[in-house]
Amino acid sequence: MTQIHTDCLLKVSGLSKRFGGVAAVRDVSFEVRKGEILGLVGPNGAGKTSCFNLVTGFYRPDQGDVSFCGTRLTGRKPHEIARAGVVRSFQKTSVLKSLSVFENILAGHYLAARQPLWRVFFPGHAVRDAEKAARDNAERLIERVGLSRRIDAPAYLLSCGELRLLEVAMALAARPRILMLDEPAAGLNTQEAVVLGNALRELRESEVEAIVLVEHNMNLVMSTCDRLVVMHLGAKLADGIPAEILKNPQVVEAYLGRAYA
Image 1 (cartoon, rainbow, N blue to C red):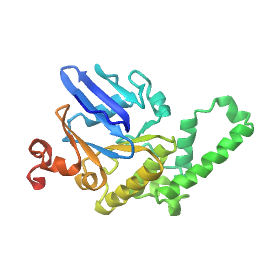
Image 2 (image 1 turned 30 degrees about the vertical axis):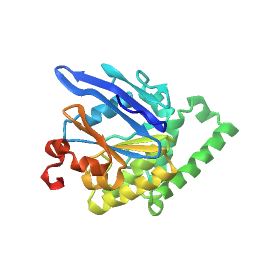
Image 3 (image 1 turned 135 degrees about the vertical axis):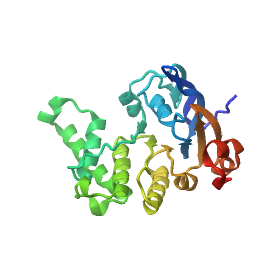
Image 4 (image 1 turned 90 degrees about the horizontal axis):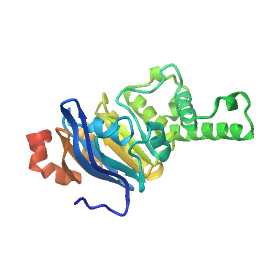
């Protein structure tokens, strides 16, 4: 039986999902604990993104359950799960390239707020106060991810590393308690990945209660994550701190290879 810690924020229990004859996720269970960065890793086709989609409501599981702080999330819509405090990014960028850094993050606030249309045309004090709060928070988030010097730059002028930091800030605009990032280091060079890892560790301390990331950059994973869940062929292969995972012969055989043995 899986041990559930008292500091558990998110509990995933026995998730399974089939697409036709393919078992994308097979009886996967794990937990996300308060204050940690959890890495969900494994080879291509292991089921990591499918698992993300099940947790965040984009897929409905065939079996299993997901709960957040004791509240059942299974069956709820993605925007309801996001409002509950579990917010995710996607492999494909959601950045609007023609807008500035500031405008992109401000747009993230508006999407999270979901204000009724009539309030746009007939704003009262509450709406104006919310507008100021959104602008203030956008400026604060830009500073937190290290993009202050690029605040007015259109997103199409950003480097790949800066775009990834902007995506993180946009997700933070929804004020998540758990931030779930799907391959945030995709396309980054070594130095950009180091900057991203440093930013994630700082954000874990100040902005969110936990971070979960699907990632193939093992240098980033090993230097940033407190704990790893390894998936293989849709199932959980291992769960432990990075030092334990490096020594797990099944993980080395299925994923890491002899370079990590």
